[in-house]
Image (cartoon, rainbow, N blue to C red; front, top):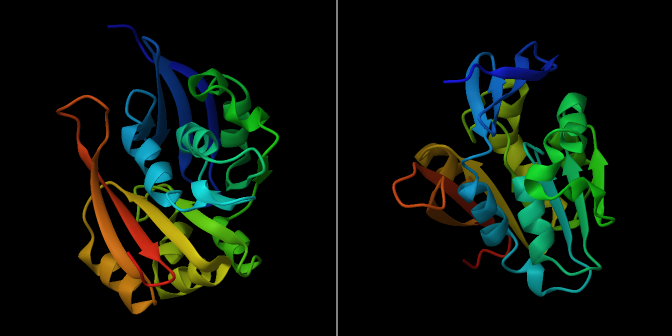
Length: 226
């Protein structure tokens, strides 16, 4: 087996070491030495876009916020779903992740950052939510491993009562909040409901092929209709 090749390394705002590595054509992003994501497993990231943009894809000039760039797969799937007059804002906290997507990670998802519909904000997604009232038709959050914060402890605030309220305020009347998670979280599901969302939970495969791990997509509907 070939050794891992280190392509890049940075430190997140909370001090976590992030590393981009490659082995046998697979790209792996490590956070504190643990696997955060892999280029060979992005079926559930694509599903996040599909479920979250189910309504936005039918609209003229839709506006979508993606929290967390990752390896660009959610962004690519979102762009493939939306019309040419769409606007997609990507909030990514770590500048190096943006640079990696402009560099070695770019070809994996077909260079989505080159699309003219995309605007990148190197900022905390919570701050972007709070500064954009009734702006988005869909908000897609793929930060850490979901409601249980992973690579940056500050992300925990996204999934608490305040973060849910900020997401709801940032959505238009019939907007949708979609949250990727590695596992079930009944408490988060209940917080969504108490925060004024109609709630639906989708269980999806991490890989397109059968047998891959199951991930969770939490869906919150501002209108209350699921």
